[in-house]
Image 1: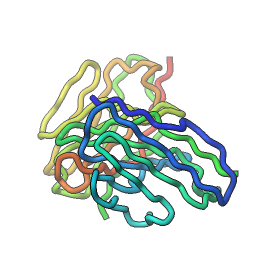
Image 2: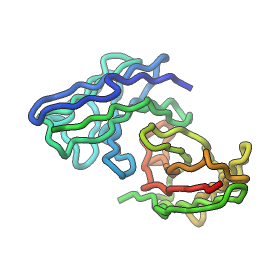
Image 3: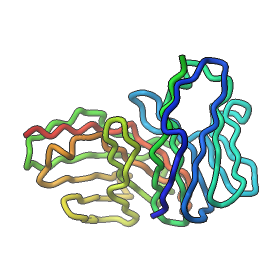
Image 4: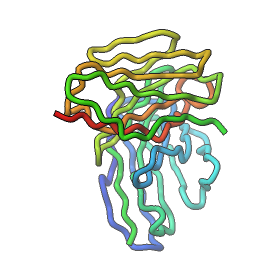
Length: 113
Length: 113
């Protein structure tokens, strides 16, 4: 399975600021996914990122708040913009390749003060 | 609204017992089904995938799928304290391979020694 590296692993940010999370995969993959896991909750899909096209956002998530880049087949970034305490979550990157199961990076634990 | 339902638990079993975790899903076109284990503070780890009706065994874990009933289960035999974690059931969202997953809220398992 692909090895997925996320940076940063955790951060504490001030409200109103933005943070960019990086996801690097050790092999080329077609689809990358960004999920959010709020405290005590399950995973919710934010968006699907395909190389060479705009990310597809799920209901409740908008590009202005969570801009995503996918410059190549091994890398993606998620930016959390204009952060508020409600954005305190774990943000997870995963990859999908055909029928193979998805695996997750270690996640980014974000706290907003 | 596509949904995946799980009992949140906690499910408590003694060491050596069989733990049974259940999951139902709403979308009949779903083709891929997964069980992830998540320890506190960690990212989800894939433990089982199942794609066709019936049972699939891997070590102490058995996944069971019944598409007609839209039901997936995970059995853990000879439960160990190290199995104490939250177990997430996930279903691929639109029946296509490599697409995003829909997660249940997870069942917390506690194995007492």
